[in-house]
Image (cartoon, rainbow, N blue to C red; front, side, top):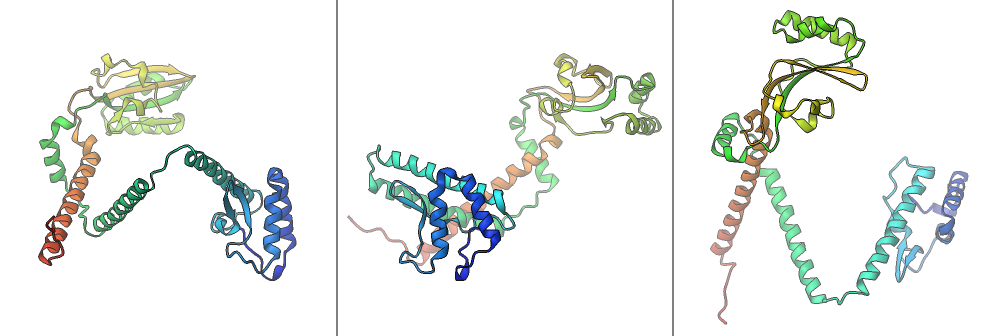
Length: 306
């Protein structure tokens, strides 16, 4: 943060800092000269001090930068932050000036919209505080299951999902036939042997992942697009794919096609959020009814004859 030094004393460190600012801001030389004048003076008739930037008839003051630069930020970093702020401020002022001079302003309409916006903000803040204090955020498995059963039409897949096991290996990795045999086995002793092999030779592998994944997400790790959708029913067979000097061994453990019912485990977090949103709406509606009834009870509401 830029600060006014007490008693007009400027340390060598500050002088060096100012000189660096001058070098970087050649096109804003007047800005820093004004800043130095501001530092050297102890009394101003204007409580905000001298301006450090101008855009049309608007001024930016040193006090407007208070809190802008994080603590422990010095040298070029703090200079860059200040410069970016000033550039952005002037940019916004230019656009604002252009808008104000090219639009017929209806002040009453703007004041009405601002008032409505203020009311909406206040109400929103109150509702958020109400939710923070009173919303029950615990959602049990039974409630999730019931919501899923009652709304299955809303959980149709838009694209396929897969459960996948895979091993990525260098193309010259040893004992590939043995790896394939172990990979196809359901014996946990074989899985243990394969895991030891993978820790030694594989830069990336997943043998027992039971999660569902969208194809798009898998493509970030695997050349899964090389397996056509027609093969998604070929479960528990090894697909062998060479790509970028690497060998991928991929097994599809399960698959769900587009337009089929999405598994509940895949939708669990989504359902939880939907239930919480319903609770939020119910809580807000209950609050509205209660406060309106209370206002009626206390004769706070009246309708006058025309």
